[in-house]
Image (tube, rainbow, N blue to C red; front, side, top):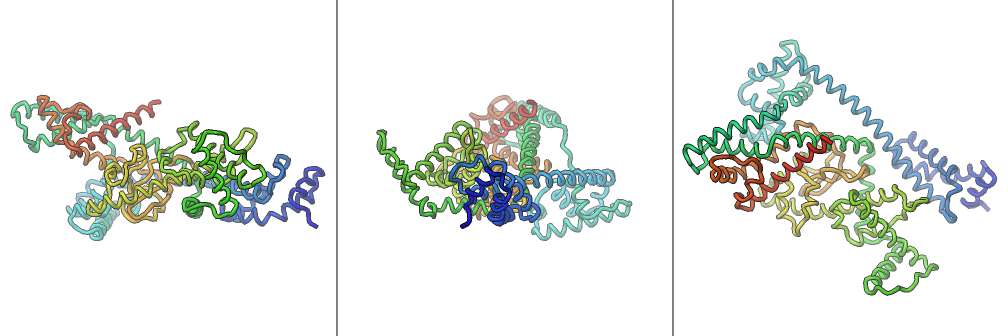
Length: 561
């Protein structure tokens, strides 16, 4: 009769029997290797994981608890080891990718040095329509749809016009001995053609415009908004926002880019789709209903009974029958829920506001697996795993509220996607805390890799709460989880400007009212316009402008620290 796993392990520990350990390896190697291969997708890495797992078994055999089921222990260790290998490989690939990108950037810099003196002459050689198309597409980084709308034509016609214009530019430079491919030329122009103006210039121009406007108002006492006054108001609003907002945006964006890079280093892009789909499928199964195993069903029923008893009375309940596996499992399950909730109370920085949408059943689902423990109690790795499931569950719950809101917005705005997350507030079927909405922003779909959703824009998480959780993105058609690309600073700046423009246009009459009441002086900051914002739209725009200004100030403060 063959010996069981614990007998063989005991022989290995007691007698240092190599034969006993070899028998264990032969018995379980297929399980370990197959589980590793499914996760790392490489026979070479799977062999490395298998060797590491059995090395851990030999090293930690004496510490295994009596009654440990070796198959389950090996499977869990294989899972953790495979994840570590995937992350290590991700870091290596990330370093190689960064080095490659730096080389590409250096090449772009050399190309720009060659064409910079000739660029404006080359632009002048184009006809007006082609020049406008290049300016919109690559100087201002607008989409082909926006280029087409500006030129009064279709997306396809705009694409053809841009392509012809690029070919003309290439020919111009080729005649002068500067040979670049179409993609290389486009990359060079997009990256370098528009440089950030000195921040102080904003204040200088705004103050000059304000002074001119003050003279006009003092002289004419006119209340009607003339063209000159519109220029004044727009300039004064830019001044009210403050030059610091642009520095703050840049500081905030740089800080976010660092976080993004750290997250990308922890993930292997080649394995992302499979691991993501596996986890999403697991979370959806958890969210869909109670466990399917007979014992866990009995445990869930007993747990519900115990929780009902607690809710009905503070008196001491009947003791748990330690001989009933269902009652023991139910008690342990409830303890895990309490431990995870207590952990979030002790570490509030690890929570996200979407957790408020998680139901009691969801808490049970994410704590279904037994927590790994050591001499100090539940391990940090066990909490990270449970929190990762909790984050997924919470964000799925929020997406179930946000997707109908996006559909409602598009139905009431001729199919247009919102430009700011706060525009969705009135479209939720029940109120959603601003703390939740502030974790999301409307971003270009191109910001993310591998988005399986249609459209130019998505509603996306601004930051992911941990290294294991990818970012959720949503449209009216569904949600997805994707990697976050390192953003192009020029695209980020253009996006910020696009967010500010509708706010400024909405607040121009408010600033005009303020100026009329203060002898033509424009407001020095957005807060001064509060009593002059009379409509709901103006009040919402002003509130958002104040928030953006505070975020920018916070970004500068963080950078100084």
